[in-house]
Length: 176
Image (tube, rainbow, N blue to C red; front, side, top):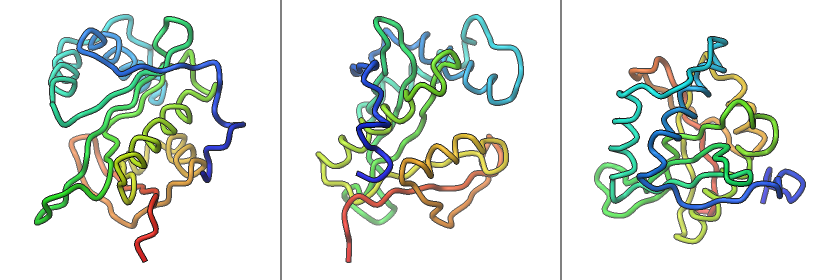
């Protein structure tokens, strides 16, 4: 698999499905990852809004989420669901809604490990591709990671509550 060689797969991480008991941890990791990106002080605890957001996400029966563990500590997580295009009845892609790594574990292979889990999941259910959106202007590091993992810009962009975003995708099944 392009971009996901054994060299990139850090064997010091394990994984498990995320559960509702992880809500506070995932909310805090997400907030800490954004704070790190924005070069502001890392929060010590999650906001109630962020906890509520993760409660909703993890309660969605269509969503899936996995955590990367180093020992017993959650290093990061990935959250997604099947994407169904308007006018279609079946999913064409797995959509990555969130990928976040605690700053203490950044640069150690956690994001690659989590993305490999998503690729395996998508391949098991025979999705054509994986898609994700990321900030167009303020997330250069993440864009670099996605490109390293075999993702390319799709040419789609959008304005969101989080600002301008671009879509990345990674083709898994040859559709020609």
